[in-house]
Image (cartoon, one colour):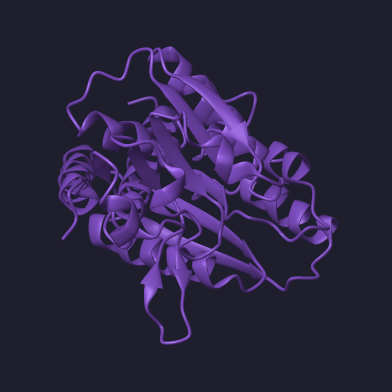
Length: 274
């Protein structure tokens, strides 16, 4: 049996979604969200499907623009330019990760800052990425004093890691960014009070590599051969050592989706100057 506190993302997300739905109804909004999906990453496919379902539930118009894995940067950029000019689209999201031949900075940088629902564009100053905001709220749900804690962010996405490190710093949490492909990376986790894993490898993190009492935030979503969905963290193993841990499914995923909807509504409100 796990010893760690399980951080329930579903309950928090349900509350946020209801608040978004109520606000959309109250303000008579018809927000439009466009999602760009490139390739056939199973985790990305799952997340996009969840976003579409949740958007419909709260009254957000959802539009999906799909590209094959080998799509050129020009194809994607042309679509972003068109969406930037579409008055019915209030928010644009590029589903990460991108295929290796595409430049993440270039693609995200092409989004109109006023429509950047993920808040990654350098010109976007008031939207916090849903994933980052979700992680922070899940950390807050532990009830622990997080000031002066040491965090390890194990991930590849520069946009995600740099933004998360900045936000953690605002809460007095000192964060190190670790590349999961570096040799010996797991041995660098022993001193971390908080581990945030966004790797894309099923059950990559084991209990032997974490500090007793650490908080574990599992961002990963991976489908096994038997269709079971698991995270980047070996939940049962790490729960024996950690003080708190997010499950997969039911942790980061629902929060990311709920906060995406909240950001979409916020952009719609800002554009209509309500």
